[in-house]
Image (cartoon, rainbow, N blue to C red; front, side, top):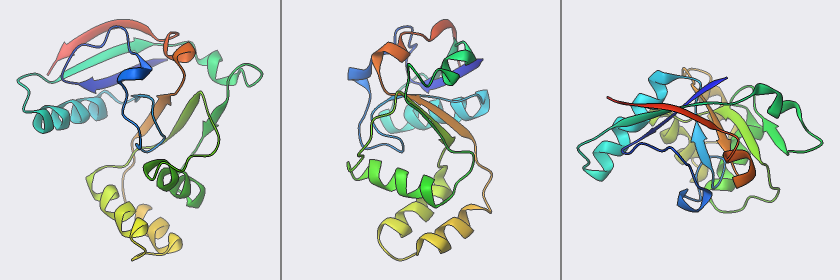
Length: 161
């Protein structure tokens, strides 16, 4: 499986200590199967950091890893639903209760962030937020939350965009 990571620097050796906490799925190294989404992330980070560069790093990983539940804790969300919303909410608030090595699921885009924020503030109910989320095109994200799985990513290349 090919994965992409958007940043302002080439990331040959990702490390968990450099990852932010209180993100959608918690502290982890975030990737996507969509090069387009990784490019959007890179440009967004470029704007936030006033960087001159936007870079997409490309990795390969063996998909068999995701089926090794006897070795790794893997959580997968196939759609933006109440369980996903509650998980994202808990992680953003630092309330995550169970550890996962790998989490798959939808990624919040700018409009999606607004919906989640309204849910977090209690303005939207979970059902109303889920109904609104169904109208958005969602990309995926695969986040790696332990260094042992991050180290299984094989760095292939980086491209400046």
